[in-house]
Length: 172
Length: 316
Image (cartoon, rainbow over all chains, first blue to last red):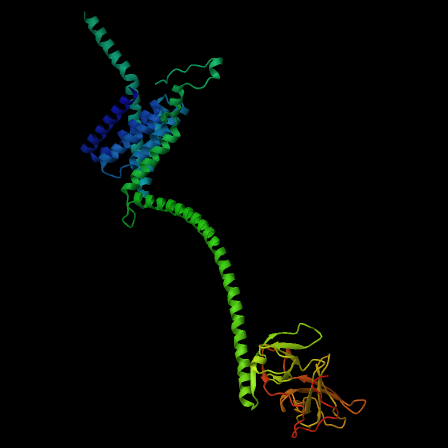
């Protein structure tokens, strides 16, 4: 079940990311939904799951993107692992730590990604700090939203149903 | 998500061997996070390397793999080469040992051959000198090889490989290229004869000094130099270095053959000088000699140098 959920989440994230990027290049560069899914899996299921999810998602993303297959996978593997480890060590059940986790993990991922590309292409790192920071912030926000959606979604749906039914009773 | 519920083992279960399920769990790679991370990272690094090319156009994966493998190959071949060298050296050393033995044997053989060749060369030189002597003198001579030394320390004699079958007779003179050697003593055998050396204390020969023509008799003595010249008047002019030649008055040694050189000459207490003579022949290295095939004469030749005061005999 867990594996299926993670795979489904990654697939959805990948589809959404490619869709967003297809609609707006700028919007696509400001969020990394696949990374968000990986961090989410790591926080929710632990280091191993995060690592495996990062590896799989990164490889697929690399393959789809057309770059060097493995760089994104390696970056996301590292990020997934360490987020999973940190998530097990600290309490990240509230929005702020989760946001910080998403934010920091996004920064680390971008640093790893750029560093690996620079290493492979034998060039210096070209970091656009503003873009990275924006992406990290957006990733954090999306991550928090995802957690809230997963954790409170059913409750909200239940509440909505209850309200709807109470309104109908009041009418009658 | 919660993991599977854990159950604390009871006291008896604590000391049991782990069940197969736990072994499988131990083998589950997911339980070994670090190993899994390492494997994934390495795999992806390999994947990245396979796609990236170096400046020379060779993929990094290929270059790294080739480089690493080359190092491993180098190490392996180095180990094998070392083992091979050790083995080769061992085998080589064994071969060297045998070769060393063979070479030592060859060196010994060659040393013997060299000595033989050197001896042959020396012998050829001596024979050449003897031949020149033989051709230069009008006397009939017969070359002879020294085949034995003297078995009796008290007697200075040698044995030559010529005998009566070759015309050798008693009292025939024996000479070498350097001078007089001695005379045949005793009855010669068919192919061997005994020669009394001139330095034997029982030997004597009529002699004279070349410069002053002072006559006398050369005799063998027991000290160095092994010859002395006796019966030379104190009045005679004898100086060290004067050549002493055979006078022929003894009827054995041919006149004019060299005997030696005066080494010391002193005025004697009586009528005669005390003279020592260094022989011209090296008696220690006699190998070939000539036998003068002239029978001894009892009479003193007329053209001989002035006879010494004493009677010159065939022996003392």
